[in-house]
Image (cartoon, rainbow over all chains, first blue to last red; front, top):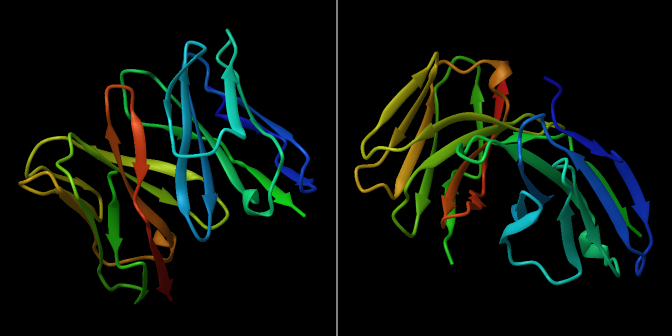
Length: 112
Length: 111
């Protein structure tokens, strides 16, 4: 099976802009989670989607949002970008009944 | 909220030495997972522990879940350069998998 794919892999944006990141899970995985990884804060959970519904949300401001499509692909959006949003954004998919997550390679976002 | 502390934050060892990282939770856990992230890579699942006092082994790696299910450890025997990376413990809470990653332990192996 193909692994989790994320696009784009690298992105440079300016403060105030918005950005949309995409994640395609492993075939058959209906749960998709998003994480932000920074040197200072580590790996932080953003949200999880299952069957197009957000099931859990981490402690991030409303500027961070996401959605999931009927084919389980997911997107996350960050509006009004801030310098502190520069990070590696990781997507992970799993089978709902199992905790083991499969991570994609991530999208490296730089906000200038 | 739940916090998952890992110690040490960094560890440098000579190749062949042993290494241990510890994960401590402020609350009782239902289960715990361990992941490894190589430099420049993404986290990769290693194992899940569920039972109190559970010990699992994967070759040179030994994972243990505390009796009170509030702590866990990962021990690597005779480290190799391929063990380099950051090791995270991960816990889930709630019915819908709110996930908390530990702070991570970054392992550097000196050849």
